[in-house]
Image (tube, rainbow, N blue to C red; front, top):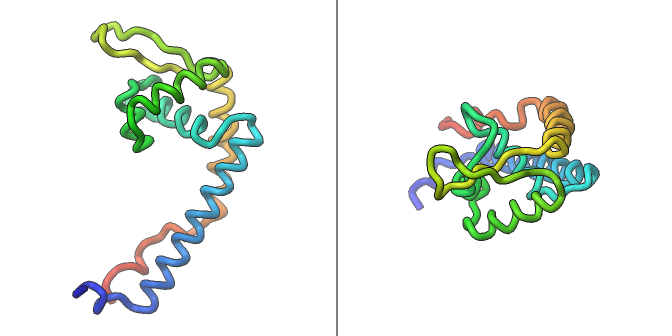
Length: 137
């Protein structure tokens, strides 16, 4: 454990504060999603569908990577979101083996509202996510 020699009390305090603020934000996110009538995982799915760079849809494989989940679990999540009217599946124009997952109007509305709330909450965290205190002394 050579690295432990270089960890200062200030580093530990910064890590503790970071983890505390991260957990606060995640709890806020969970409660906001539930207040919107969806699960926290459904919110993350909507976020990652819309958050793919350069387009407004995602494949199951991309969503599995973003969610750090098994593809079969993501398929089940997409199915639940489809039943709830949040997303729709469309066959890919370029690869018939792939399915594109798109947001429906209800999913767009939920995501827009939750993204607004999350943006405001992130502003309240201020410098909590500043990792400069973790650098070497």
